[in-house]
Length: 127
Image (cartoon, rainbow, N blue to C red; front, top):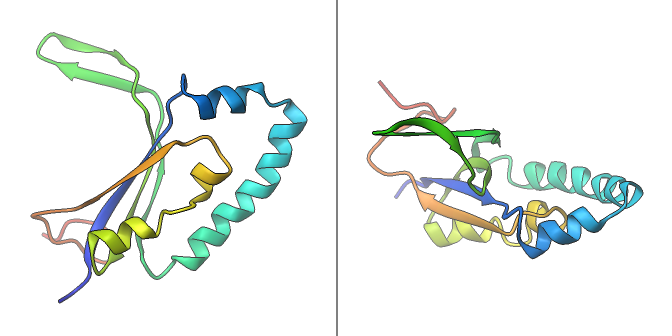
């Protein structure tokens, strides 16, 4: 059976304890954390380069569209990545100890299978 593709979504609760601790850091402490965290992110990417289908992106300001119109919205979604793995559990294990949680203030990663759509190796839907 071929490996499946899985979407991993990182969460940051800006009112939660990880962000409270992050906001309590001095500028020098944050820079020191960045000096450790950014190379750790690069190392994670390198370790999992064969499994990363789409490197994803950080996520920014949110607008929510409803039947009533468009309005600003606050959510905890921070970033995403698409990986290939033999199972959901194997995909989830890739994110244990991820630098976004162990060094930076993300508090969780949801990992879920991408269903019903075949994609090419770049993560684009096949025509």
